[in-house]
Amino acid sequence: MHIPSVLIAAAGTLAARAALPHVLALKLRHDLARLNAGDHRALLAAFADDAVLHFHEGAHRWSGSHVGKDAIERFLQDFVAAGLRGELGRTWISGPPWALQLCARFDDRAHGPNGEQIYANRVVIWARTRWGKIVEQRDFYEDTARITELEARLQALGVLGPRDSREPEPGEQAGARRPGDSCVEVGPTV
Image (cartoon, rainbow, N blue to C red; front, side):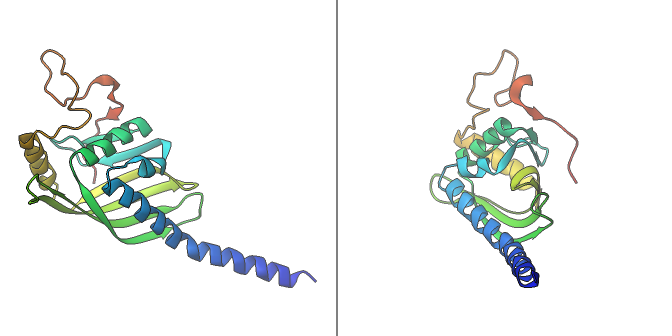
């Protein structure tokens, strides 16, 4: 009879399913450690080519919905250029491997050139995946005004991101988006 092999297969499946959240959390922590060290590539690799990262609207360099890997790469480059660092807190993962959803606590901060803290915030990140790649991410901040305040401090310090470092068109403000920037402006996220 094949019952023992069926039981072994079922036990293996359950064990793999139970281990999956821990493996994903380890990978996220590894990718975040690389991001904190200034290397955004590992985290970028976690996104699908057609992914969308929705971020709080406002007068800051991260504003809007970032559509596609190129736009998300610019977002992450801006994160690194601003000197932001973050810590991943509790993480919740649910769903089958082909459609996992993730919710995580993320605390981020930045320090000025003299070591003083110029920004700190708490975030809840929600992400939807398809076979292990993030296809949609939404970030919900405890205090969105802090992001605008950080942008003002960064501008005062002369810290420019990839979008800000290009030459503005005549009549355009530095850092403004151009039609080819692959970032779609949408209404406020909830």
